[in-house]
Length: 166
Image 1 (spheres, rainbow, N blue to C red):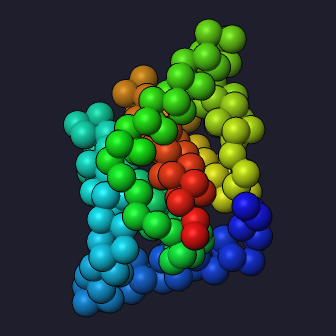
Image 2: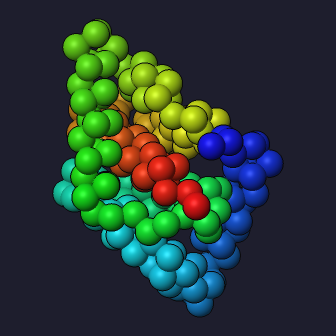
C-alpha cells in the first residue's frame, strides 16, 4: 500500500474544509449520505466514538478529521465491519498503554508512537498536529484525555481503511 502523498492529503483537507465553512447544508448532507452509503459502519463509529468523553466541538472535529481520512484514502475501500473497528481500536489502545508504561506521557510522544505504526504517517501527522494546536496551553486532564482518544479513533479508522483498500 502506497501512503497518500501531500497533494492528495491537502486536496482532501481543502475539500472538506471548504464544504464545512460554506454552511451549505445540502452539500454537507450529500457528503454525509455519500459517506454513509459507502462506509456506514465507519461513519457511525466516527460519530459515536468517544461518547460523553468528547464534548460537542471535539465530536465535530472528529467527524471533520474522519471525513478527511475517508476522502484522502479514496473510494476504493471495502466496507469495514464493526468487528474490525473494535479489533483495531483494541490493538491501537494497547500501543497507547504501552507508550504510557514506557514513560511517554505527553500527547506529542503518544502521537509519535501511534504514527510509527502507520504507513500513512503524513496524513495522521497532519491531523494530530491540528488536534494538538487546538488544545489550550492550560488544557485540563479531560481535554487531554479526549485528544488522546480522538487520536486513537482516527488511527483506528485509517488502519481499517488501509486494510480494506481494493
